[in-house]
Image (cartoon, rainbow, N blue to C red; front, side):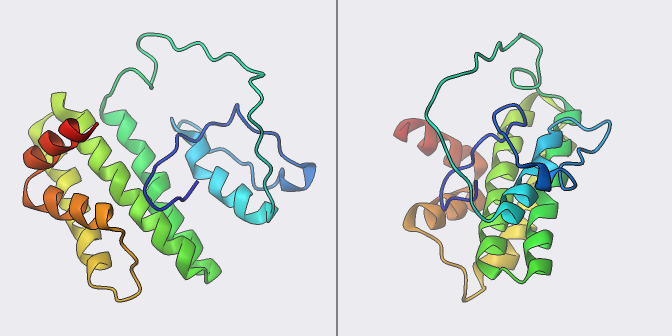
Length: 171
């Protein structure tokens, strides 16, 4: 979930949990992306997670679903991403805190581009938050950026347009 260079989509429907974790699985009411608020906590409390490549579920993606459309409401996911570094900080887990903070930065970049049809002030707010997070983490001597993370961050800080152009050329 907190890899060094990727952001995975977290879903409630793709998991089975032990009964002992049911107290952690309190999804916030009225939120979209509600699974992002609890999955990392459940994984952390579980201590051990098994993964299967079995395809036992067909997921129908509808036009107009939160996966295929983007509105300001979709930015609620950032609240969950903001909470994760704080959670790991409270747990005293510096490594996962750092990975969660990097994940927040990747999600902010993603939201910046997905919000292109929204009001320019929304994109500016996202970009300003990204810059604030980047300032916090870039000068921390414990931060372990890979070459591609350093490059992506520097390009995005310099110009989101240049970042986007170069990213599209490498995909």
